[in-house]
Image: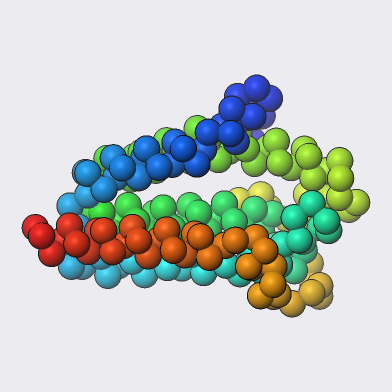
Length: 183
């Protein structure tokens, strides 16, 4: 993957949450949910939230290299979960522009941040270079590339505040449902 300029990656890291809320506002305005789009998109989005939750319960940020759970399959399962959640929400919103905005947002904000984060992790976590060689960045391997490691830890899920993603997802789905009911 082509590296992004460091200043841009830092900018993307600083502004991605704010930009995400702006995209969410446009998303809710453009959304034209139907009953079937809410069901199908809601299921896909819930899968993304579950991936993020699974990953958060294996991640001791900046303390140790996570190689268990989803990290045995993909280096960035939180971003994979975010992308799957976004795809689900775009499906639930049933508007083509939403899907295009999702792709643009992911390319503009998440890909630059991934490279910067991996450079940082290579400096502070022993074994990261070997991990990087064995485990794909964003497309999960079907078979785990690492075995063993600690199990899911609910305290890490809570410490990483991953419940915020769940609450945000549920609030967005509730707003989409309200928009559907109002017509």
